[in-house]
Length: 480
Ligand code: NDP
Image 1 (cartoon, rainbow, N blue to C red):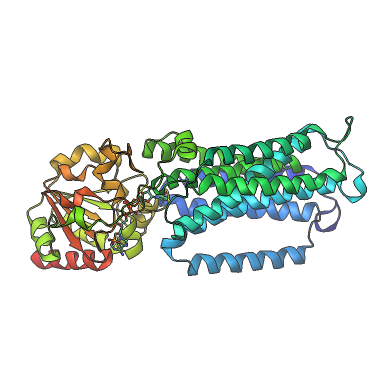
Image 2 (cartoon, helix red, strand yellow; image 1 turned 120 degrees about the horizontal axis):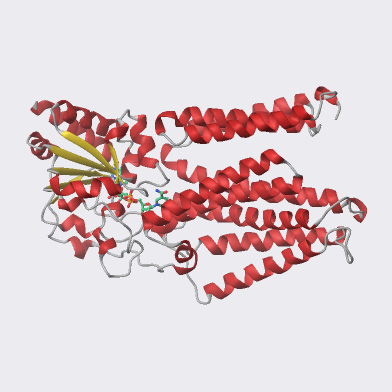
């Protein structure tokens, strides 16, 4: 090591990595609560800046000037993305970030293999653990990359229905076998053993990436709408696993720590999402219920719908003692959180007990509703999770469902096969009156009709979430 940091003892690098790892952990801790999440993000970003900066300068990968220029370009792209991407497109963006993380890990592991075995075929030191880690990083990274691209496309609405085909499991198993076979060759022939891996074998790594990329697509295209939260959490976890294994290839402790943190937290999230959907991971990845999406729903609702207006709902609220607001994806689309928060605050001032019923998969990314409501300064104490709020509906006078559909769909409780069968839902119909605000009778992400719209105590408040909630808030204000 020479250059800018030349002459510094090796311990400096270790201490810098330790500080970076500590910042990651502190940042993650802060992210466990919406109130401190932004600070957590900044702390983790500072850790990553330190880790990347010291690595690049220490190993003289780039000159300080080029590093600075790269940081400027990266910061400009990041700022542009953060300010120009619509809040409703954030889930897709997060999906893409997972994919880029996985893709980068696969490419870096491959570059290291070239470094070890390339350039004339004279292998430098490489052992089973290096080739093994590279093979895992390649497979997991490539699966994450293409799987995330498909997931982002599904979230964006490019691919609406799950794609199923005859012999699906056999095709997936076949591609998986190809990956395992190529990986076994790479792992089994490291340098320094008989029949060692040579530069000729390095292209096999790129073949491995191609096979794994195909596997990523095959794994995600058949996943049904309502199972997507599990897949997104899993891809997030895999992106961490790919980074951690690349850390082993490079022998870089801070990458191992960062990747492990992402992998472990993503796996916890996957477990939470599986529980929220009442699915096992195997059931999501291998099972699938096919395309059970709704066709023409007009006959289901025909003559059974009661609609209402903001004036009527405001009158209902006048005499209510407990009101629960259930937000869903439509609240994010309509950006209705501020109008909803204004209504909730007025109800609270009038002595009404107000709660928000938050379903774990409401919206399009984990914690979506909490983030939006926190942005509108809704007190955290008012946000009640599914298990806490469900028993209270029987004592609730009015439930206002705004932009939610699948998370209040009683079909989940029926024996009929559906993409949401068995998913715990918010039992809003147990309240005296349910007001459902959405623009039409169209289905939610899972693509199935919702019989709740036809219930005797359900009133449809048709309209955009922000306009309807603002009109309701204004009407309620006028009645006081
Ligand atoms: P849904 O997708 O079930 O329904 C949202 C409803 O919002 C639609 O029926 C739509 O009806 C309505 N809507 C859309 N725009 C507006 C608007 N501007 N104003 C008013 N209403 C609007 O949402 P839920 O939150 O109930 O359920 C989430 C679904 O997404 C679940 O199936 C979940 O599995 C899935 N999912 C969740 C992820 C997560 O991590 N949370 C990730 C991926 C998928 P209309 O067009 O009639 O207005």
